[in-house]
Length: 168
Image (cartoon, rainbow, N blue to C red):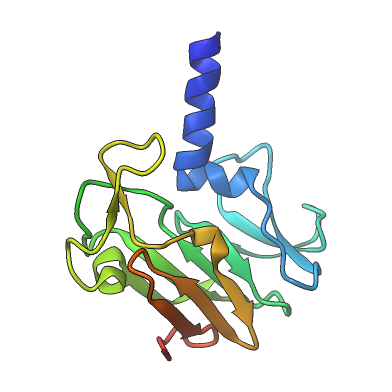
């Protein structure tokens, strides 16, 4: 039983599809949040008004982990994962994704964010054979229509959440 519980905990924190249903992300004004459907644990990510799963505003059908929601609930920033498999940044790993009312507007690969294949942090925590490109993916924040996040090499990136474009 202990091995099963331990495996479940690791899956919950490593799998973007599962993690989005466990961790509730709220807009800074607390008017919007992620919400799940217990009958569809691997279904779409729902953005709800307030914290009620009965008041769904729209859904996101990509396999992403939501990291930020704008105060008006329209814009969402997500990532393909906290940790990526391998030891170098790849174009196939989605580092950041921007959404407007559930529609994808811009995505950045881990390689685009890292700048080079080797500009990653390897094997942090218990996840051997994995890499990261962000200092702390949950450390990203939206301020006045800009999403700001720090990379593992200390750069602070700022994106316009309305377009997904890198502005700094």
